[in-house]
Image 1: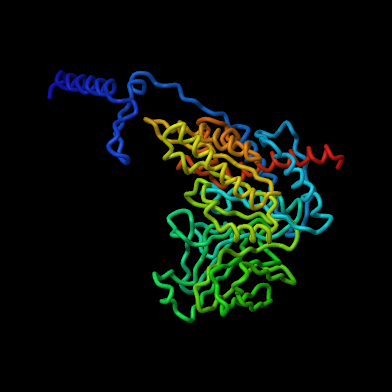
Image 2 (image 1 turned 180 degrees about the horizontal axis):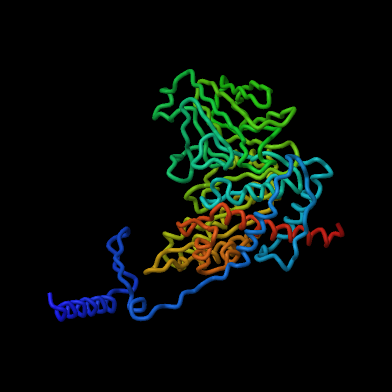
Length: 478
């Protein structure tokens, strides 16, 4: 082919591409709900758009400093609390009506722990952003090293993602049921984990159940946990759907307990004479007992639970058993609920009204939990920045700020506090900077934090909470 023909061909191709770019819809062509055709826009083709670069230098410096100063004190050692500089708090807690009053009650209880040998509990619920103990592990370590306490808290027998550092092995035909993810749980009774492990698969006819069922599980807290989280001296077992003949045999720290799973109760406690890092148990009975969860904790100090609800938008709490939740929260003495949700609605939410509806729905969940545990503190952590690919660039989901605003309104109007994770990261389009940081602060899915980023977010939240704590102490002359 002659040079002239080659040039003519290239000109025709260029003109054709330009024509397509000018005529092709900017938001693409949608072929059903799952398929979308996109073409480079005329702006991208003819004029390079200015990229918005979010400066996260301060966040990177903080992440570096956390790694540099991070220490692992001996288990059980209580350190002196460092008072944060108010000017260094990047993102503060926001409060609605009556929020500070409940927080002051929480702080008064926190203050008393080292003097009275009492205990308190913080339950961290969230979506997959907190799986593998992300954020929670850092908060747990901070609370336990400064205010006392041991153990990883409430854990399931079977889980999508067990807390990092907890090795769980099972024997027998355990089956998981739940209200989130792709689990089956319609018409079943759920406690504080909103899932349970059943000794056998549920048959269509309960008369088909074997008369001699047996299953076991073993838990080992490993070195991946912070030092205080690796051992415990109290075990709690939450259960349901038992029968009068069901028994459970537990072994921990060289001690053994055999107990009947009384149908009139849903929980029992096994105190230990010394700290242990392993627990094993075997359940036997004539019906498929449901193990709602096992708590590995200390008899004093702070316990912080990591409860990830994969795929959930935080709107399943009203589907739990009110009686079982009330009994469990009361027995454990839950003082604070941290609810971290919002990310899972982003790929599906379509307009501003849907954001408002989601906020109203979430507010009903807070009110439901408050009706069960009215004296507890509630803090909502909103969604982080999340990116979707539009054209050739990763940008913040267009409706993410609307979802953030809806959750903030739900929290503040329900008497809860709000922590803005989106702004703490740097706001719009900050996720791209977190992914590209060296080392990365977020995963290449442009949604989840890396372990380093999760630790940084845990520090930002903890510092915001402790800033309020030290203000409380100052106001009360302590």
